[in-house]
Picture 1 (spheres, one colour):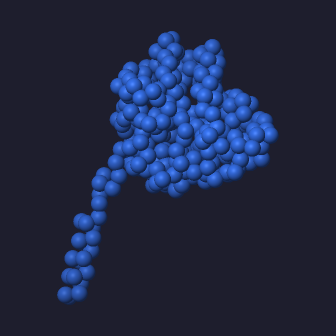
Picture 2 (cartoon, helix red, strand yellow; picture 1 turned 30 degrees about the vertical axis):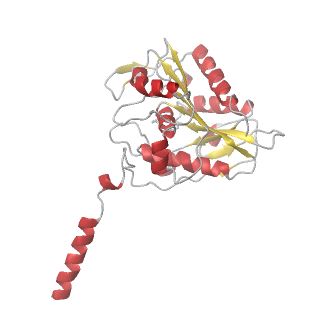
Picture 3 (spheres, helix red, strand yellow; picture 1 turned 90 degrees about the vertical axis):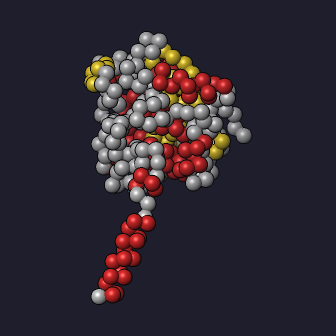
Length: 291
């Protein structure tokens, strides 16, 4: 009887001594029951980028260069779908043909998650998304033909927001585990604050492209963070006055929905803005010379 009581008392002590989930982590913790790390692989060099290569596969261009810069593509909260994969492939192909390797992260597919778009209860919170990018950067840094000083991210919507959080030194110290960080990040139509804060006054360069008619991720939620980053000389900001959310999404042109903020939104593909975005992203990445 005494032994049983002691066992129960010890068990109770362990239960109450253990930190709760909210105490053990912060800033929108990963809520998924399936949070195993992603696995990345490397394929033979190629001059063409296709849908298959979007999913955690490193593709390097066929080139004589011994060290190659790599761009990590970060998809939107919808993941990689039949409707948006064409546009992701177009971006990957554009950068590949301009001399960059591509690693497209698929956060959701390997974990059996269909969407990550419910802002207050995402299956994968920002911490999980950031850890995936840190892991991808570590993987790239181990490749002998990758220029470790020119690893970048290019994100779209939630992917851009993830890039904004990647720029935060505090988030890196919290989650990075001393892994390598991207050299710089670029984001298209990313928001800065909803139920969490994404872009803040970070310490790595950011290219931030926004739409003046984006009613889904409001560009003016970024005001303070953008100003703080400009003061540090780390922000390149551009607003396309008449662009909506997802201005580069040919596969979603005309798509209408009620956004998480309650606004009714319609995506309008704009080929001229898309072309300008491509050039701005390329110029931004090209501005970082090999060390």
